[in-house]
Image 1 (cartoon, one colour):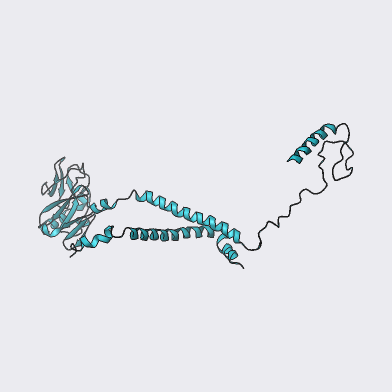
Image 2 (cartoon, each protein chain N blue to C red):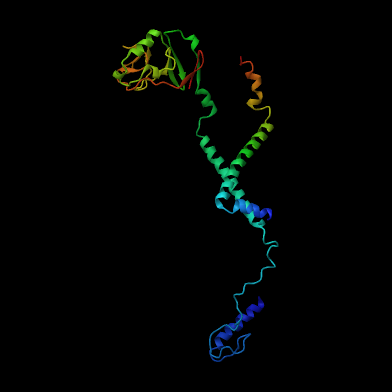
Length: 231
Length: 63
């Protein structure tokens, strides 16, 4: 450091004095320049762009890819862990939105059908809504099938609304404004909504009144001969 | 050829293969990690979980 400081000071002195006379000859080359000029006197004709020899610092065994493989392996491992972590994070957030186990447990209701006699209605609660279960007589089934489907407001065959013709299972919510219709009443022998006077037939189809659609059919299946699972 | 060169030429030379290997590895890693942690958790909480004590309560219920 000290030597450099000394050089600096001589340099600036030189720069000031060069104008009047060629004081100092450039180092290393004898009288290259005769003219006066501002220049560093640390001038050399040697090629300064020579690349130093780093071979001493290079790793032995240049041919193999060990260090390259090591770097890429580390990069790849970080990517692998990040990908797994990102996937787990996203999955956690999304699974947060799906229904929890206690909700799913309440989502299904099992009904013992053997206790329902022919020609009777049973109302059960399923997901906070009433569900009508009607054990229909053969006469009622025939009645439901005798209707001219084309004349209905919401045309639907009776066969499309039941899985077994003797069991009619549907949501007990009027499609008009959500009242609960009364069973075994109305002009068509089915259900009657007291709120605004919608009449449903024995297949739960809208026949008269303001409701636009037939009573909704929930998802259900007969898990055994006389066991019904709704949901 | 050294083993490192073989690895380099098969996996790292092409970026598509590199990324594909990383994603496949992430998939495998996740399965292995999850099952390991689950196993550890079950071992640590043995006797406390529902699946361990279920037989005490459910047996009578089944016909």
